[in-house]
Length: 122
Image (cartoon, rainbow, N blue to C red; front, side, top):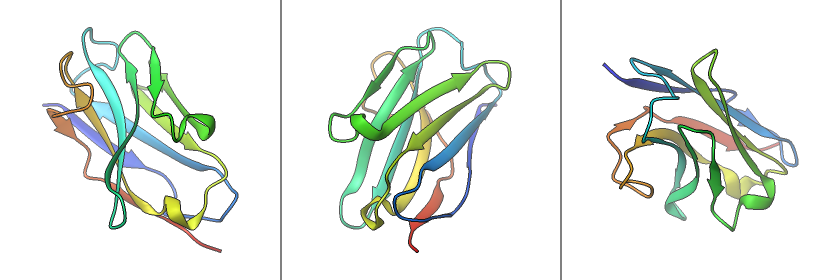
């Protein structure tokens, strides 16, 4: 039973760094041929693909966020993280982590976390 769960602060101040963790259970983030993905959803933008990390540790970001986005994995803890720097209120969204197979780089995904609301406000 594969489960993903996001965790982290629900409120971040403008200009600060948003940091979230996706804890994975039921499988290893090093399992071959999977992508580990961060996505966010807001009323203004809908679903927005942010970036992905392969099971081998390769990371790709969407160009619009690449300059301030970092995705990394910790195999010993079986989780992967998202850091988004210099946040503004426009970064307010529900943030999801997800898993995708080799042909699901941009979706569809076989497993999603439940999502976590992050609000950027002072």
